[in-house]
Length: 479
Ligand SMILES: [Zn+2]
Image (cartoon, rainbow, N blue to C red; front, side, top):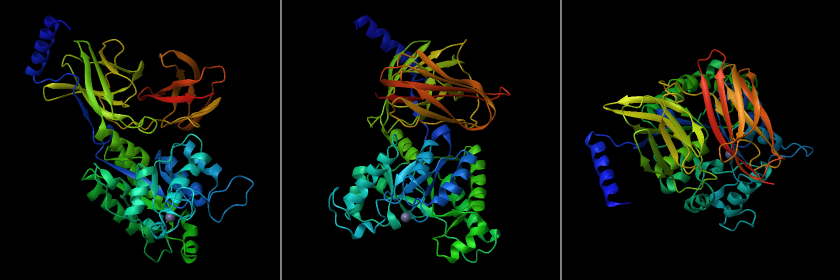
């Protein structure tokens, strides 16, 4: 750079800062979409009743839950069914629908009574923690098991330190909400709340006091304090089966009716931007990315800002989009955002004080981000309505030669799904039709393509024209 150019840049930066502006400055929101708090549903012990009853309730509200599997218990088709447990086929289906599968150890022992051992010696802490992760990842190709739930919610410092070698987060009990920032070994002591239903439980209304209690707790301790709440549950059954289940000694079984009523309350809070509902894995990813990312301005002109966003975390795990407010020149009214050649949707462009900001969602380490003032193709959406549309990670991933891409649309919509290469060139259109509200899947066969990373992009426009959803994800074709 010549001396003259340096002087011009210094004058330009001075001129920008003199007006109280730092063009390209990035602020990350505590929770996605600037929601106030976060919440995760978790289900322990891999019961089939969770597949039969909890899963459809979660899906009907568009919520994603975490299912903690005791790795040795599910069986494959043709093998005799194991007690009340779901099968691997059922867990593959749960994973495919975008829910998280976590580990609940190999055999559900009292971990703190075991020898430390090693990963190859059964009945040791290392074996229970390491082999359960490997077995689940082997049974459900394409997933990464990154969170753990302690059997009986028991642990000691040795268990915690070994859990920290294999898991991004580990869940215990104790009922206290988690802070929005978590550090060090606290990641292996994530708190969760169990609903302990008082007897009698003869009629559905007997469980209403527990519903009021958790709703009040979530409002006062989680939403109002910006924290992360978590619920853990065991069996989920229609209420007609609850009295028998209680008599048979099931551990605080939850009724489908109760879960449905709780989800309805949660949905209202989520629609009101009060609470972000997602899996333990995704909340963990969001917090760790939020606390680790570094944003840098690569270049600034009147019409173009180029930024880099890196988090120094493992990109095969930490690929959840962060909600960012990026300052742009006050004269901008529209913006076109691209990352790695792919157009990124703009949530909103808004003025706060004397400054103008663009709100968008960016995955760290997925390429430089360019923001272009663009009056013709730019997107100027001025609302913060939560996006209920969802594009799922393809399954399996990596894949050869075909994979499934799932998505959820809350309204009847014209849906386009296209595959792009790393240069942003369109490779294939998988869907281009009007679809009914609900969960859908398309198959992508890559057998005529070269191995490598591709992107898939959804554009969904509701039939009434009022809702537009755009999202892009990476897929990995490995021959
Ligand atoms: Zn358990």
